[in-house]
Image (cartoon, rainbow, N blue to C red):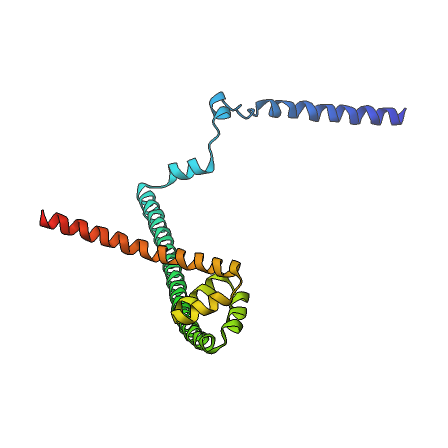
Length: 205
C-alpha cells in the first residue's frame, strides 16, 4: 500500500508539470512556411553579390576583365608573330640549302660535260689511229647513238672505211641514227629561216 501511494503521488506530480508546460509550447509561434515564389526562384550567391555590389565596384570589375582580355589578345598576337617568324626563317634556310644544292649540281654537271667532251675527243683520236677493221669491231659493241656520234666526229674518209668494215645491219642502223639526228637539227633551223623570210617579206611589203 505504501508503494502504491508513492507511485500515485509521483504520477500526480508529473501530470501537474506537463500540464503547466503545455501552454508555454502552445504560445510559441511556428516558423513561417516558404512562399511559392521563394520556393520556385531561389536566390543564388551570384545574384546576392550582384545586388549587394556597388556600381563603382562593377565598373572596376569590368575594367579589370577588359584589361585581362587585352593582355590575352596581345599574348596571342605575340605568339602568332613568333610562329610566323620561325616559319619564315625555316623556309629561308631551306631555300638557301636548295640554292647551294643547285649550284653544286650545276658545277658537277659542268665538270661532267667537260670530261665527256674530252673523252670523246680522245676517243675520236684513238679510233682514227686504229686499223679500220679493229675500229669497226670496237664500234659495233657500243650503242648506236654513241657510235653515230663518233662517226660524225671522225674524218669522212676514215668513217667511211670503218662503216665499210662493219656488218651491214650495224652500218644501216648507224646511218639511220645519223640521218635522224641531222633532220632533228635541221628542223629548228628551217623554222627559223622561214620565220626570217616571212619577216623580211612583211618588211618589204
